Image (cartoon, rainbow over all chains, first blue to last red; front, side):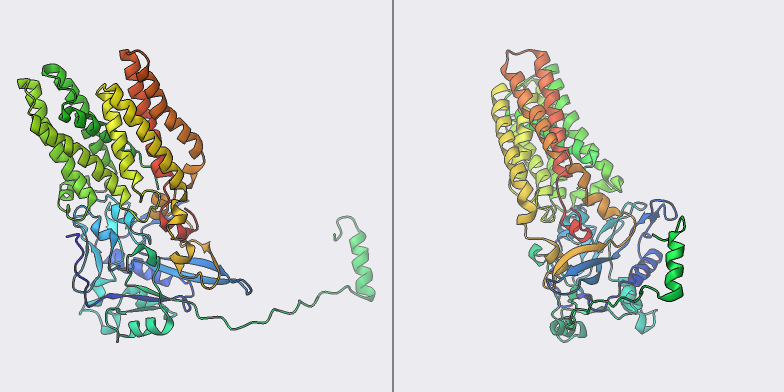
Length: 249
Length: 290
């Protein structure tokens, strides 16, 4: 059913640290790898080796430049995937019931065998978290690696989303944001985690941690001139060579 | 938003078809026999043809029946149900006129109400989207309804009704274009709220996630569409409203009436194209484009 369940006590989600992310895109690749080989239709690519490649991804890393008023610009890498919203607009618009939010842990999923590929859920999502797969004709989205996190066939350290498991910088954290005492909740409280587009009322479960303030830097001294005009023989050679046709400008 | 031909054709023709069905059901005209058959055939070709066109953009049209299940929350599901119920009810009403020359009045009224409900549910599919501020306002359903009823009256040959409704539709359309241009800025969603980085400084998109394009950019970012928006708006007003009204007000002839219908359809197709092409989805902010 596309009616949203009552808010669950358990709210599984991600906390993404914008201070730590180095923009390596490893999470993008591990996500695509795991999710193309496991649950649901593969994440197809169109013209992958040609002139105009495109494909389905459940996680994409944007990069933004932020220009403070009186300090050097900062480059901030910004991974974005489904935020598993509490009030998920993508769920209620679905005409078939394919799109749903799990009552037990709040994960938003698509039942691919019920999806008619109308695309309305992607229209309703402000974050661009849903992509219609051009090959399978069904809507794909982050499953929070539901086939890893509860998978007892995997070693315990692998029972977290592929993006979190692979992040070399430790910029991604997975846990229960409904539990105030969980590590992720403490991290959010400590670092001032925030919601994306809070004004749209989607109540995202995933949180973003802001970049830490930069150290105060004094403006750089003017650069010293390193290359100086030559003296003696070198100066004569320079002048002589410059005078020749095709010489230095 | 990408102006998909299937959706433009669907909203234009099903709007006209259900508009005509509304006037037929209300009994504004009550043809009988073969003449009733022709009237209902025109209305059904428009309404059903439009609905069929809408299935062309589906990834899995063979599963379309599942779309009748989620009427509790989904406007798209409600539209499916409203359209099918209306078409069935008015088919019985039409059969009464064609075969028995008898209007089942109450059935006609129920069908007329259903036709209005269908157009309203169609408009709400767009109006409900907070992610597209230009659509998320009361003018969207009002405009869909006025265009449907006005176009329906035009097809039904109801000159006075048509002229009044088309003037009203044109006025609402002008107002919707005027307010629509400011809707994105008024929505309060911008680069700062999208990224949460506004406290540090001015945010600008530096690098997109991939070198190529993707589904989101193809579906939601249609910048080229706005290049000639003003000219197309003038063309849509001329074809959709002004020419049909003039053709209706001069002494009646069947050729002028047919030209009025053709001109109106071309005008509505143009403004429906603009409805999509001018609409900006908030996800474009992440790409530094709208």
